Length: 93
Image 1: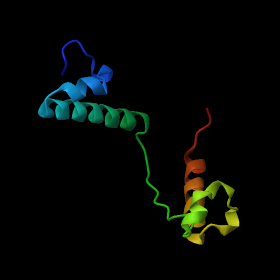
Image 2 (image 1 turned 90 degrees about the horizontal axis):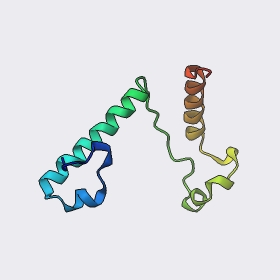
Image 3 (image 1 turned 60 degrees about the horizontal axis):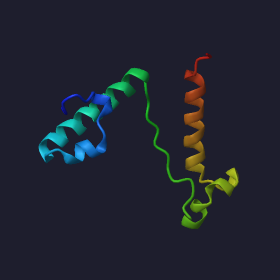
Image 4 (image 1 turned 90 degrees about the vertical axis):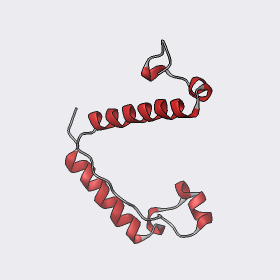
């Protein structure tokens, strides 16, 4: 670790100036801290894999303008499952 620097206060410039081995150790430590923070904030988590919403690349570029009925059925069913999961697990503040 760089003398006088806190773990969460190491700039990319400092890391870039370190020898390769030490820089890798610092980056690994930072990555681990991020990972630990996410696990603390989200102890229970699920992963959902969604297919591409559209096959046409040009339409994907303007996805925000495409109506929901043009999306692939597999994408819509996956999105429905994700939405249902979120609302079943969400707790009011």
